[in-house]
Image (cartoon, rainbow, N blue to C red):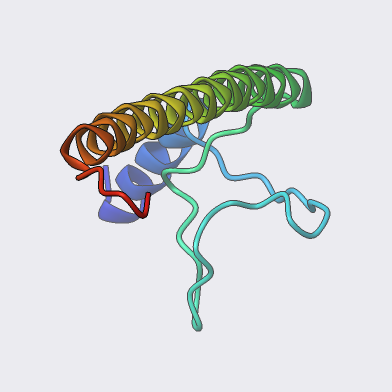
Length: 113
């Protein structure tokens, strides 16, 4: 067997299991970084549109759940800050009333008053 015939046989053997095919895709459907000279597609796989749509649905569903959770946290924090504000204001009012009562108790009564 010559070298040329061995190469032909090995090429035919490879083509049984590993063959190249040209596929034209719409713009935006190829998610492999484009090289300036020649793009390497040996690690590329084809994914069905249904699978991609299912994944996108799951992503948007989880994103919506997360946004809802963040909104509820935001509302809870707003209520908590309001309660803290009211509590601080009431404590300051109590302190003010105590100081006023001390002023009244310590006020000297004279003939003029």
